[in-house]
Length: 395
Ligand code: LLP
Image 1 (cartoon, rainbow, N blue to C red):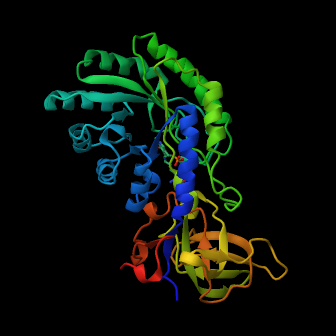
Image 2 (image 1 turned 60 degrees about the horizontal axis):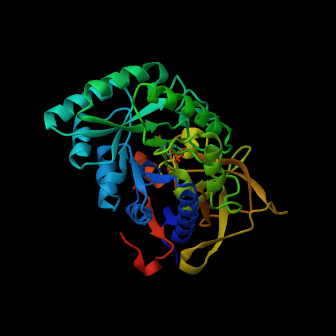
Image 3 (image 1 turned 90 degrees about the horizontal axis):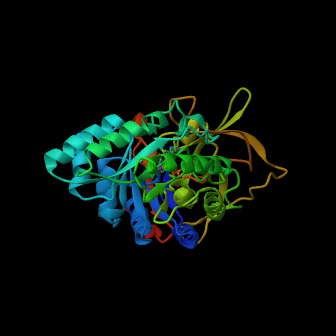
């Protein structure tokens, strides 16, 4: 007997190992970590990450409240996002969070007014759009002129002038950059750091001294063969920064990884409803679709799909060999949703598939459960963990 599909299954041992490697790496470089809550806001996972002493990168008032509830210290919470509502800004100020990451002059003006009304101070980090191409999928690129994120370089001085006018209430704490997500090589990171050196110098020449230099997240994970590299390359990410960023005394590097912390520890388990012989293809139709994991439909993202042989200890799936065997067949692996984009893989070699077989869709810990929806009347996927037994199943 198995848990009822479809469900997310989290390998907490892998999460702990990943956190351990990240913490050691960050510590050795002296860098501070803020977990990007948007990647996965599952409370058990958040609590585990908060326990590591990290800060949180939040993008809504609710994320700020959730992060605090799950043990992140308010002073280590940064609140970014291009469209913060007045209520969200007020909530953040009232809870004394670490900093508001401000994405426009217009937002800075509103924060200035609100701090005046509330008679409070706000720690401000200016997010700057550095015009550096992350060379990743267009939908997850954020550091180009055409993107809505951050203050353009040409307007930095306007922002500083507002900071100067409201200097009793707006406290300048640093600068922030995030150029994109799922970066698999470090050239864009180096390019960013070189840009940051120049931007920081320009800001210092105006009499503003950033303590925090936040370089965002974006470290990619191996979606093709996750078993080969379950823990992302934190060392080379930090080393690329170390090699190119000129850090002045009193300045701290902050990083905001999301995907690289949680991506590989989650998988989506689904059951084969039908193996349908089409005119030209064979379709494996699953009980999970874009409602449970939207990344393939939204970004054309690839996730490895494995046929499950049996459930091992603690319901950890044991896969049939990932290599292409003699009797492999080609399948399109699709979901049940009424959209053609509801497709996980095309022409994928898999061992012969039958109704009721189980499959695992790997590397689904980031932007998986958190982006699931109830479209087509689906209920939100259930969630199980590597430390649960079947009898622990919660409804
Ligand atoms: N910091 C900022 C300001 C961000 O906008 C993001 C992600 C991160 C940190 C974390 O980036 P990460 O380390 O996870 O790459 N739903 C898309 C990804 C959207 C990323 C949005 N921003 C996907 O499934 O690929």
